[in-house]
Image (tube, rainbow, N blue to C red; front, side, top):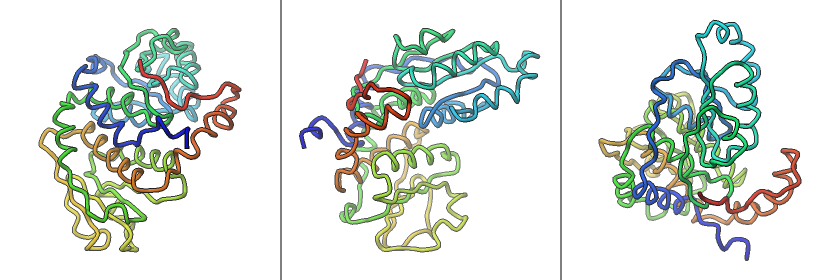
Length: 308
């Protein structure tokens, strides 16, 4: 199909992003000086905020509950105990615009993490942190959010790339119909990011699941299946999934959220490579028709989102 020509798979987007940040280090952020902020984002921007602020007290919100949470904390804001809002948006458009305007109206100083310096949100925010991004298929957002995560964790993208290049998948990797990840409990906020990628790339056509050790114990693997590959990353798996269909991947000592995000996205990309082109066959219609209409827009989305 002609509309598939420029659509790379997710694993290639990961490698491209790591190469970019090996050449150009993400900017430093002084967010550690901010106490108890609102951290607002949509989709994986929300989850990126959870990663960045995993070691700090923060109030996390998205486009569905930000207005409600602002009302709930109105008295606390008036007392000056909450004074900052961090808005994360690669595009600096859509919901981030009204979120910044509302935060400003509520008396909060707004900080925007974005890849779009000339966006509507960038023009409205009090402070803007600008990150590099590459041209990528719509929804991928690998370089956008990975840059923000690496800026937070200070991991070396060259080490991550080398590590991923040495990961060995099973010879029959492409034959599985279901793929599950088990992560250490501290990486809990990676799990919803994998779930979003599953929805974007496979919809209801394929099962991809992600659990922490703690969640995996809660009856997530009652039904072992020879067609499910259970991948444990940086943690031991003695019990979950069919015994002959498990894969264990050890992590380097320097691993943090950037490594886990890169590795899991890379493996999901390998799944994408081995299956029918569900995403590639449907993304054009989504971007040109009902995707923008859901936002009340008649202008189509870019199928390949430009870099900066």
